[in-house]
Image (cartoon, rainbow, N blue to C red; front, top):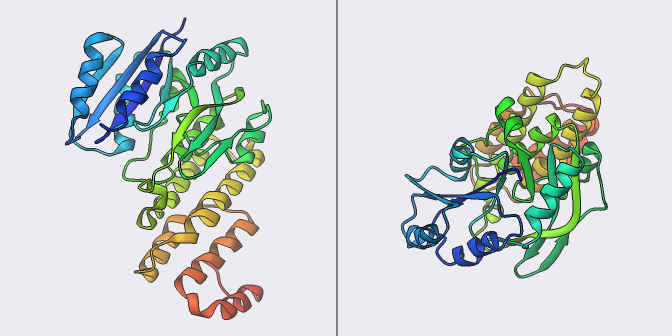
Length: 317
């Protein structure tokens, strides 16, 4: 049995840790290490973790000054000794069959990544599953399950070979960026159409914070730079890659981010988005939507004039 490294950033998570850690210890797949990184917590999280670590040597405890989730996950990757790597958020939990079935399928099919569905628990109850998709571009283009890392198992050697890290200094979109770049270099994927990962949706999740939504544009730029570094325009898959990239850009940067950007500093934020995206070669439709949304955000009172200018092709980045 190959070893699985489970990386768990912890910041003031004392209310959730018992359920989360217990769900890992109850896994049918037993050859794992749970790397718990205390990211500058001020509550009793460290005491809870140490209590479990004293009883189970598979739990690795690391303490650090607060660095944020991306840097913490990157530190976890450096520490990991497993053949496979996955991630778990401190307030979520997992089905006991999750890792066993995902790794079994991954090894049986000689795949580079294993993916499962998600059950969202909170004010609403949502199951996020797909039909049994095996082709990676079909999976990427579905979009619904790509924007997370905790429902996926990755090969550590591929992460290291292509130096895939989480983009630090961001709060939204870093999971999407990491998963998308990894999928681009993965030759084969495995998918289990079962919602094994239990995601707890709280009102304080980053996705509700309008001030953090600018992060998605930095992450999409990071993904684009990865494409330009590792794939030439003459590459046989380049067209598929750019179709997938543009679709994700529309879904996550345009449709998602613009709907709730901060109402203050519109000019500063719109100029920042323009600068971030200036070097990205978007297709005609995506570029049009980006320009349209930047203008509507910057000048919300002039929507009719903006539509007229765009129709006459009078404005560009």
